[in-house]
Length: 92
Image 1: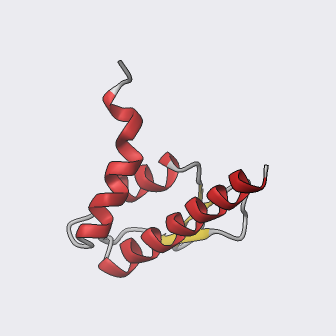
Image 2: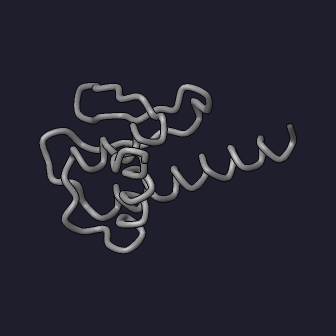
């Protein structure tokens, strides 16, 4: 049996699609890192960059609650990642 946390990124993505409110930074961190993004902290923002697709970049402000717009961006960016991986898998 696989650990329950194995499907955590997928569950977080589904949650983000359902509701954009009530998200914490740790939730957004878990969503992005669960799909392979790396965290880069800079002055005022935290950036999420995918090592294989460096043009996929998400962000969130430091020191503030995560607003609905940042969650919507995460859904869009992770969706693009999934589409790229599906496309790459279909060409192999």
